[in-house]
View 1 (tube, one colour):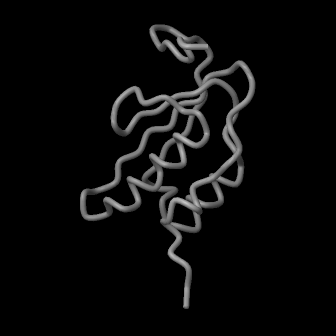
View 2 (cartoon, one colour):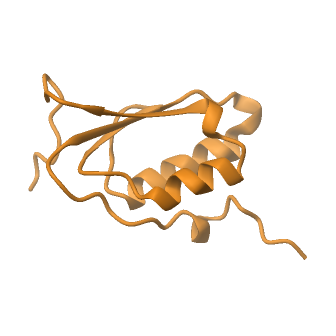
Length: 96
């Protein structure tokens, strides 16, 4: 039997480290809700903070294994990951 690739147990990736800001934005249709939920679980595990339901940010770099997992789940064309050079109005880690 094949293991479900969208389980919480498959959402564990290394936490972000570093001082740069990485932003992850995604647009996944409602009919693929489990994939959206899985991405959100991954982002929480990596210490991302939600800016909007489908826009998340964190300080540091993204785990390369997360990119591979997106590819394995046919999500690369629905997820955009980019770095921000100036923080602007994004407030991350206020509780630290």
